[in-house]
Length: 338
Figure 1 (spheres, rainbow, N blue to C red):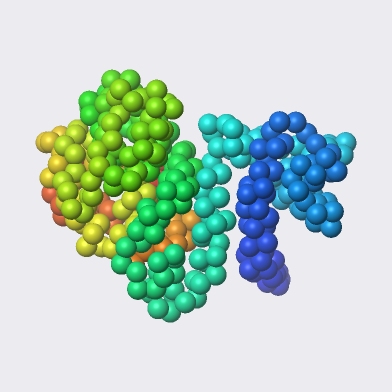
Figure 2 (figure 1 turned 135 degrees about the vertical axis):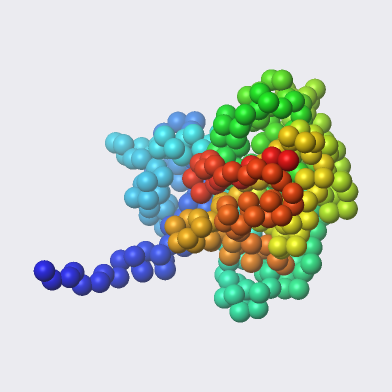
């Protein structure tokens, strides 16, 4: 039997994947899907409403059709069910915040990946040699709000899975260390009416967090507490959560945060950590591995890790029981019980 000759398709598709990526990112930036959520539009009308040049409009919109992000019927463009649900800014299911941030921040930063690979230095706003990744983000209120909204977009599916899958009936209080807008706490509290919660983050996050809780009718059960999880103790609650937090930091800092959680929890309390956990063989969860490269670009020492890594750090901190559970997509959570 003759072995088929190798083909270049996968190489070319991956090497030029930024074409498709930037087409989608620009569509989100120009609010194509939000516009089409109102009504289907023909080429001329849609191009006019979006401010597209006549030279670009036809190819741009048809490229979105060919990529599976738009449909075209009888000369009218309309959203697919997925883009209508997830990329219309007026729907609570909108996840475009992470794509907005990818367009503004990550896309240009990733052009410096080769430099990061050779130097080990971050390539974000603060530049190589930066020791505080988040200082530039937190110093600009608009940039901070966009970043926190992006974290909601990338985390929503996992947040809803945690709200449904974790045995919340065994606990009364919960804190989220580094909650961003607070969507994880919001989803957990909405699903579990008996819980009260605390969002623990730097004071600059407070107004954004409190606004998000008010929007969800949770101001009476979920409060904000300002502080630094490096300088201050974590809140003493039955459960402490860290969602897309641990991967921001180096190994020593990861161990320190897990140790602080152990110190703050009562006996029987639980630490819940979730990230895009790399599979133990480090060969299947490409998103987790690419996220780790993103941490290389964004942070001085952050990296993603396997579930086994995380459980070992938790055991070293004194937790008596650990387990890993898949959530959605590339995300898994590790639970440790004190």
